[in-house]
Length: 423
Ligand SMILES: [Zn+2]
Ligand SMILES: [Zn+2]
Image 1 (cartoon, rainbow, N blue to C red):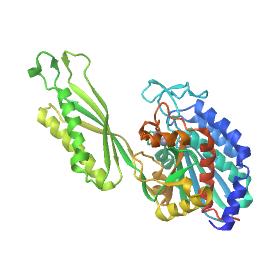
Image 2 (spheres, rainbow, N blue to C red; image 1 turned 90 degrees about the vertical axis):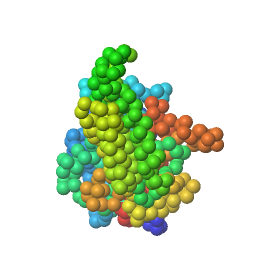
Image 3 (cartoon, rainbow, N blue to C red; image 1 turned 120 degrees about the horizontal axis):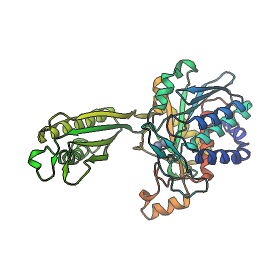
Image 4 (cartoon, rainbow, N blue to C red; image 1 turned 120 degrees about the vertical axis):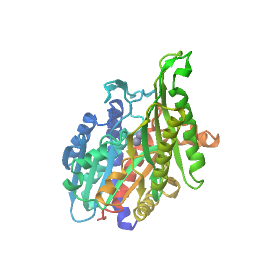
């Protein structure tokens, strides 16, 4: 960062301390009122009102509940900032006094508990903070800001829905697309790297067909339970035997269901699995291996019909543009000091954030902001127990409010300013 940029950043962040109490109230309110993917009407309403109050041109209902705010501030680059808004069907167990007690109807008609177990409430608060600062301090920067609140990240629907609703033709093309996620890590730090930053993810459902019979007469059956057990074990050989040591992949079977009674052999078994990869070639190879193994195991069992393999969702690989990522790392080190800026390899988490840059043919950068109490993190690290800290999607996931709230706002403003020319 040059002196003019440093000065602009100082002026932009000057009113952050005044803003923080409001942001904290909003964060707690959104946290206590989580909404499932593609149902984020209340949260979208809060975001839209906030943008309108701050003088943005606001468009609502983009891809069902998406909100886009535009702030034109003279000639200069166009920067897009993104936050996702949705929560998860999880029963919150944080014990916080603002914990969610909300339940909602999921797309299958089932009533489920809902909680912000991935921290998207924090993302909403960060973007509200950053957008307010840019609006209040227009004399410190120039260019155009696109502020985007996205629905349905957890189901890989939201970015796609906004794009299908004409996002790239209805709004100016950004010079860079920026996003951030709260993660396990010392609060007050940011982390990222150039290249792949979150993995591609593919979820599959597999129905295995057998022939049911009385449990005492297995010879009359083709047992889908044994078939499913073989499939699950054999799938474990994909990563261990077919993926090179220098490559990486995860294959996790998260659902395995069959039967209703101990003395009845069912006629069908159900498997749901999740695949994470960091390279398109590896992804294709792993998916092909799954199909091969599932079909071969069914054949080995003499299944009466071939298995049914369907895709449940698919997230693209999310790749940070090298030049843009370096520019942001430099801005972060200048603002936060080098000790608070960590290098992190690609996370086996997945994101549909990458869709925006891909669709617009614009570089994009995604980074992580620590949300764990620094003392707790240091102790867990010293004890070799980092894996025991509640991670995203855990019922106990709860970022510490301070300094996480301020750090995310500062990161977003500093990163955007690396483009939005100072003045
Ligand atoms: Zn998540
Ligand atoms: Zn998330």
